[in-house]
Image (cartoon, rainbow, N blue to C red):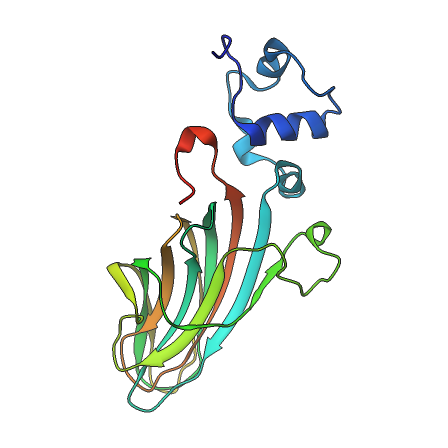
Length: 216
């Protein structure tokens, strides 16, 4: 049974122990006075994320135009990953000059698009190789098909839009704040055929807290 004001979220305890050089197993009142009653830790410095076990990740992938087909560049959190994938922003760039556009969609299910293996760590302390995706979970998947919907997905909802005119290449950045549970994703998909897209995703990954009851 928890003591009054006891902090049970492991990532907060771990951050306080390491950041403040506290002795392991500090009593609940010591922890509580450090952050109670405000949750300022959710606005912490970027380099502190590493201390909580949070992975800072980004990746860029491109799907070139294919005649008669629709292009897709999606970020997917695999089924049973055990982590949350939180998208901070996405940079979208048209790779062709055909009039039309693309939509940003949230979906459930597992897309059968090709894994581009494009994820890399944004905090180099997480990997000795700057280009490594070792330990990351989110997958950027690309491909083209005869539908404006990524293959293999369900429960799709349009949440963003990107527009390009003939002979014009656009570059648009959006701050999103989309949280992907295991078995869901966010996709950039063209709404007209014969149009290619490049998407750069920036996100972070963390394990589920026991109180969140997720992780499947």
